[in-house]
Amino acid sequence: MTGPSQKRGFAARPGDAEHWIKSSGPPPARGPDAAVFSARLTIDVTSELRGRIKIAAFRRGVTVADMLRDLLAREFPPTEGDPS
Picture 1 (cartoon, rainbow, N blue to C red):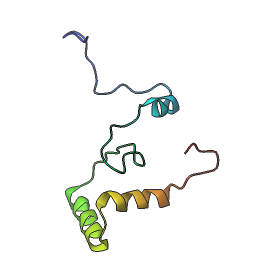
Picture 2 (cartoon, one colour):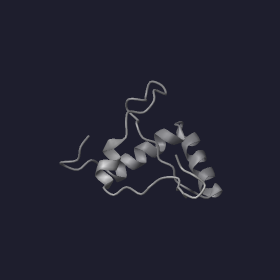
Picture 3 (cartoon, rainbow, N blue to C red):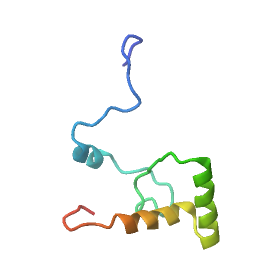
């Protein structure tokens, strides 16, 4: 347990990123896509950009999450030898 004299950060920086990424357990079931989308990514954007993203998703008739997943998949395709 952490006492008042011990300062603890929100999250410790991993020594080995590959081990840290692979060591997380399975996500809690959240719905039908839980098995497919198992990681959450949080980024900081301006409120103006957030608004533009939401409008673009609405005009395309998709959710922001689906639109951004497609964008990230196009920008970062799997490379040979990457674990799936």
